[in-house]
Length: 333
Image (cartoon, rainbow, N blue to C red; front, side, top):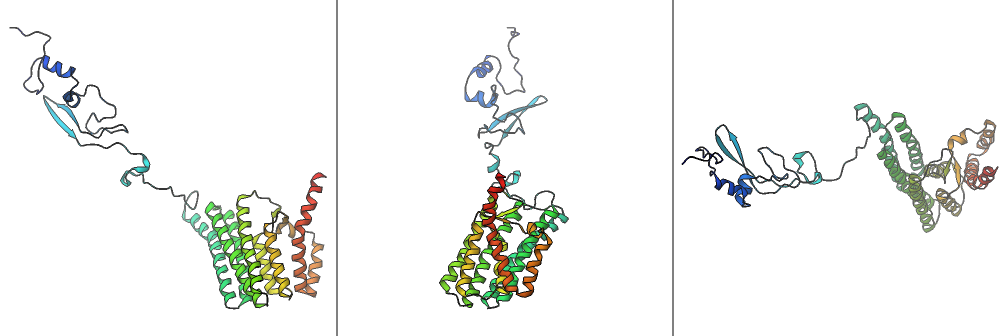
């Protein structure tokens, strides 16, 4: 009987059934059709050797037929797992889990910029170390050495920010490091030094402790407010912590010999001046005053350094309320 022309030729090199059996197998929805034929290909499944699975990939095995010449070869691909998000991938893929590390030095990290960055932040670290040295001197009873160490903290604190801006290596890390060092040196270390000195001068320990604790607390508030407040190029909002530490250190060195209770009250006033909203002129504006105004403090220093020092500090502390009262009138005019 002649073979119909529409029937498939049964090849000896093919394991597939011929004719209508093969058609029935293709029309069936059995597992054999899903495994062997794969007519409706799921885009999430691997359909060729070396295929890349996507996020919808199923973890079962696929059997893929590959024709090579006149023979068929069957390749079994191992089970594949669904693709994971980048945060959960294995380390060898290049994406590691965990928080992203922000570089301390923004921009190009060349050896020269790294050296400049280290010099600028080295001043901050040196200021912190000088604050610790001041505490050690005060605990040993060497108050002059402690006062000189606090003045060194003030000088180094003025260098770190200027060097960072001049070298072009200013960074958020440097700003936070400077704020923490200021709190340690001008808040905690200065309070400990002044407490030891007041007790040595005959002040009551409880009163001296309360005044010095107020210095530490107000310094922390002042620094936190400075970090989140807009900057004014002409005035400070409250007395800076560096200036308070410098005044207290100079008071130990060249200050007048006043009763201990007056000294405790003066320390409390310095502490509260840091957290007030009174505007205080920056030192740059003070230095630009007319030269003839400097004749009075020069003559006073020639007569009595302690009295002149107390007068200058008192005038600067009172300048804040005066400017606060005068600024509305100046603005309206």
